[in-house]
Amino acid sequence: MTIDLDGLPAVVTGSSRGLGRAFALALAGAGARVVVNGTDPEMTHETVNSIRDAGGTASPAVGSVADHTFCQELISDCVDRFGSVGLLVNNAGLARDRSLVKMTVEDFDLVVGVHLRGTWSCSAAAARSMRCSGGGSIVNISSGSGLFGMYGQANYAAAKAGIVGLTRVMNLELARHGIRVNVLTPVAQTDMTSVFGSDATEGVRHELQFPPPESVAPIVVYLASNRARDIQGQVLSFDGTVLSVWSHPKATATWDRPAGWTAESFSEVVVADVMEVTHPDRWGAGAVGGQKGGQRSVGATD
Image (cartoon, rainbow, N blue to C red):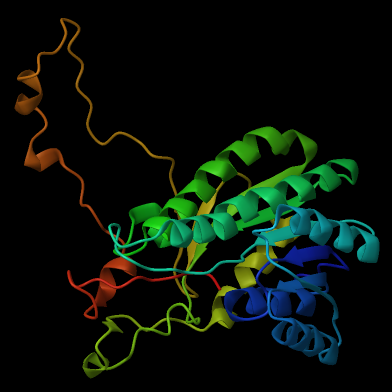
């Protein structure tokens, strides 16, 4: 059975290109009315026109989610045009990759401002509206970089990890209002991942082929639908073929000494055999070449 979103009012941030554009097109194709957001007016309107040309309903909203006031206006625009907001996809993002010691304050603040604070700003505005209209769905886009870390992405990884923590809190506070909040960590070929060439001679490559954004978009349609009404507070990853549900952090080894511990006693149990693999992610660990240390950053949003 095909999912019909039946005119669902939706906002997709960062949807003028890449994954966000694929999300917006897929949602509109399923019947949602979409507010398309981007910082480039031409690209934003081009996405809107593509949706309209395909028979869908869309409206442009040009601006940056790093601007708290704009985030409030973005949600208000959806309410004014479509009567309410039933879905928010916090996808907007950018990368400013540098090693920890070379990263500037501006690099750090810009990335955190767009990804993390932008997610909070848009979500807070959407939640206020959703509480008054019977609920809705919020999908926050994170990344494997936020789950595992990534060379050269202290700002991006910190912001994406923060989005996971933020989502946990949002779920605790908003579930009673009928607002479902979930995290999606997608993997796709976008401007951020285009740095990886298919040939080792290009200097930077990835051992895996990134899937097209269109192959990842259907999961957002599903999460927006009534079929996902019982899914909340989850962290999901999807790369077009492999779907995973991620657990809360949990202890892999625990020791209890009621008599207390000395500084020396830790060495008896905290040994190499009980340590965790530092980077088990197949996408993040697949980047080779291009930077000292054999790693290059992987961005999951656009």
